[in-house]
Figure 1 (cartoon, rainbow, N blue to C red):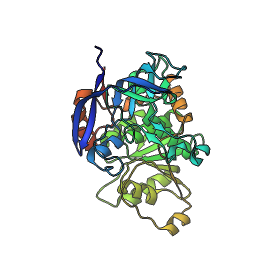
Figure 2 (spheres, rainbow, N blue to C red):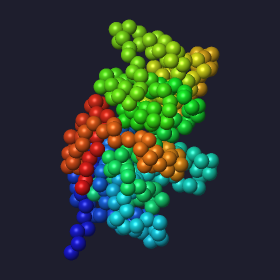
Figure 3 (tube, rainbow, N blue to C red):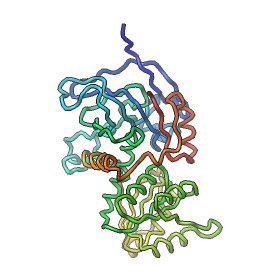
Figure 4 (cartoon, rainbow, N blue to C red):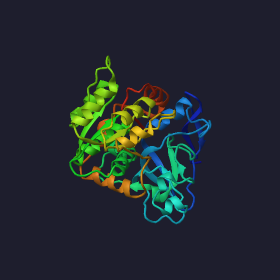
Length: 344
């Protein structure tokens, strides 16, 4: 008899990963099943691992939303994809029917289904998803670039939120994977980028790509130093990608007059600001979350296929799927830029 089970990784409580043999899912109408080839660990997976989102996504949960692989089963009515086709998963599924979707704001759709949060994640040998969210990959795109399409679209969406002009100078505060991918993409399409992070190694990586590292003397007040450098460089947009109260405060207090501050990080604690100060300085506070379907995925796949960007540059560690528990623990430490796991 054919094997109808698959290996999947579940979080059963904070910092507890269990591998289980569970039934292999079958695609329904309009769905496809993907045999996973590469998956990567996102900051949101780390939040789930640490138990930060237990109320939103209670245990047990199967995380993982950054993945690529090969279609191995087609649901009824799927005609635009083929068996064996290499695809990358777009993990956020807006409903397409609510007022937010009608406005083109599917990224904040209240009915949105999210792989690895309220849908089974791709930390498993197989994953089922709606066919329109499985994107075919051109041959010239490497697997290690393909698996990072989704986080790259998050950075790209943030850049579009800022409505920048050619040649503008921006600053990125916080160089996790999203901050680094935003930096890499911004440099590739012609913006000047200043960067800051508490880990010098991450700033050095961004410098290798052409970014300018903001060096701060931590023995002195940091925000006045940061503000002076952003003002001197004529920064027009500051991207907060650290996801902490500290990085959000730095971005808001150090942004030059007239700048846009784009909140990309997912801090979970209150951040204070004085409305008069924000107004007097003419700041615009914007937010950016995930990406716009389908435009952002289409554009990033195009940029990778052309060789304009190479998201795989941010990978700091490669592991096998069986090493997921250790990989999540490493990711939670904050020093890794991106960990990718192979399933095949």
